Length: 404
Image (cartoon, rainbow, N blue to C red; front, side):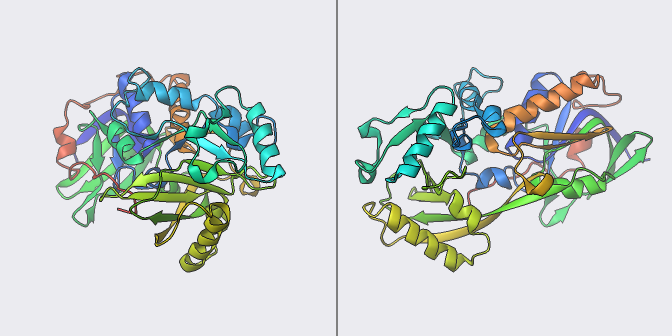
């Protein structure tokens, strides 16, 4: 018989959601391990713009939507964690910007949309002071300062993983990967891991899939028929140049659509050169374009919107990414973080980076609802880490932004 390891929870997926959950579970006393096939944060997390939304972009029709209600409290909750006084310690996470801004544009439609949205979201949204507004936008419509802010996603993943070296394991190293299978007896599953040093059986009271796009394959391995995953693709654009100004901005169009026409966040590459990362409607509508065509569209949009920003001699890149979510009727974007459970498996999607704390709340609530209290796993647990160290080839690396 292969050796056996027992624990309370096994998390699959080392993005922001899986790592946030690992912190919460460990602090509550649950014996927990996290398994990651690639690099930590290497999926949606590192490719996110890092915006911790407060909901205004989802309330542009003048009333709270489900999405704006779910996300409205997130900036304050995240700020407590970054200050070191929240539910988890993120004091090592760097802020790219303490505020985010929304430019209504110069047309009446954009101004009305910003006004309606600001009335719908409670607190923290106000007209920006002139000194906060980029020079090339002054006198060109209203700029609002939002309660939203921007985190550096690379430092976020490092902060979330800090202190958990004995709980996070990689499934692959040097071109080889551990193979995973689930064996099922009645309503319980047992994870079978085949590593270079031999097999290991892992018995957990709950398996939590937080692997984003990888949830579909994990669900199939576990024998689940639902939920299915839907993908909403984006074609992001980055531009870089030594003298780019720092900008953190939603640019609204003239219509009343919920997605900003353009969203700009500023970052730094490995040479400390500034990078603009472009999302919003540009990224959503660009998925059918070639890279060259998307760059042409982005160049024309920036020339139209920001003609005085001095955007010459830029280096352009495109990145195709998928946002993974639970399948919804008509492909509708879910309003909130989402769980689906079947016996001892929980399939989880945060939907957005900012909602990682909500996802952890939902999992914790479900465990308590099911009577899964900390520390009741049978057999050797986290103290017997030699079993895991002999099977898993170390800890995963940390993902880096694609422009690096």
